[in-house]
Image 1 (cartoon, rainbow, N blue to C red):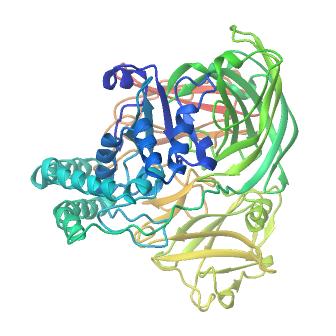
Image 2 (tube, rainbow, N blue to C red):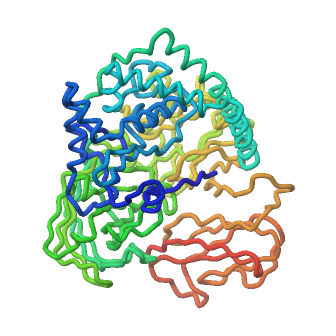
Image 3 (cartoon, rainbow, N blue to C red):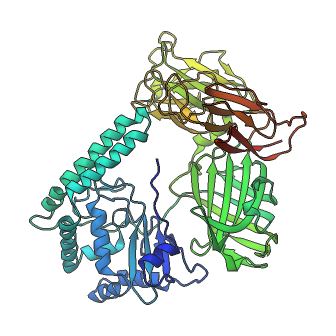
Length: 635
């Protein structure tokens, strides 16, 4: 399910402000403090290296005198900030500016004060107390952000905040209307959620209703006889993100190649080095693209981006990107990545079309253009280098020796049935190029108690690229059993952790399994049809059906993707269907309703091998339905 929200673009500024030419900044774990200034990302006027308005806020907050407060009022619209702040607290938005220095925009019209704009309000209608503190916030206030912290420590400003909070309770906090809206949304969720998720959704809706009913009393009680204190200092101003690696490469491509259907086939890339967690990376294929930056699916012609897309041997996709003002794309330009005008990041995707499972910042680096122009087809070449830092995602830390050991061995926990019939079981996959003898490993259903570790039986071997179902016979595995809320770990005999997973009650109950989706590389999710010893099924889009007949045409994608030898494509058929691709796999055969799979071995109708590249596949049902997918073939 999705909620559509309006992006912070020029159209939004034009509709809500009299002048849309001012400075817009986005705050993501950001604040107005000397060491944090670079965390505020400029979203307009990026080509102008002018941060004087942000510096003015920082300077005012550094002055503890009344003059500092007056200076703050000159650069921040305090009245509107009080409403913004009180609203965050009222709705329990702990992951906003006041609660976590996160999820906010600030906009300043020319010669006017900053106005705060809310964003990312997805952690709401819950306790205002965030999970990252070592104390419990009072119900009526949170003041982690430097501006909120400064204002709440001033008697007059604290009184103004309390008055605004009470005003919102009197004017906008209408329990009857809010409960009615909650009921409407709960009904929508029940209609469209998976059957197995509806009980959880109903429980969460009750939580929201309880919050609405009790919020007024909780706040007023906390304000009586006087407002709650906020004695805690601001968090440390030092930002310390773990360093996870570094890279240095040479690239050549053309302007506009970012629109290519086959980015891996664009340009050339030469890695001088690329290390993650102290390990040199190797890629089977790499391409370079350049063009206008894409922001929320829209082309931003004020900014340019250069991306290096690499394909690992395990089909994982690695993307290194630098973003910069369009006017700086010129031959001979050397630019430092300052996390302001010039920013960089890394994305890692475990498989094509999967959400990124790692996001890292690039800093201490830069881009040097040997040749560059924004003319269509112009040559773009140079050097791209930097240090990678973990930031809100990613597992490739320098000290993560266990994860590196697991990746090197290639042993993957792929599926678990904690309430198996008749036996509990788990499935392993060998992602390496050699057989793995499990006699060299131990396992346990407890990640912390070494005494519970149990050896695998002698002679249990997984061949390269094969699956193995391990059934847990209580006689053969004394003291070992899987439960509804459990964990599973595998170690080498010398104690190095190779693989681990954990699951909660309801995720691996009777008749289901806890399985990776997509197979081998994806995240775990509950699967209604376990597949022990075989690839995990690609989940269908069917919520409710009778006799396993799909309710609509559905193309489920292919796996693996990219592929080398062959790939499997799954689809649902409601009426007669004719599926056609590069090669005709169903040449007019009439299919009855049901779920189907077919495979393509990378050859055309004449039996000739298709070249490496990106291919489209299409499912057509008469004139009423067409669905298409995209896959990469690697030779």
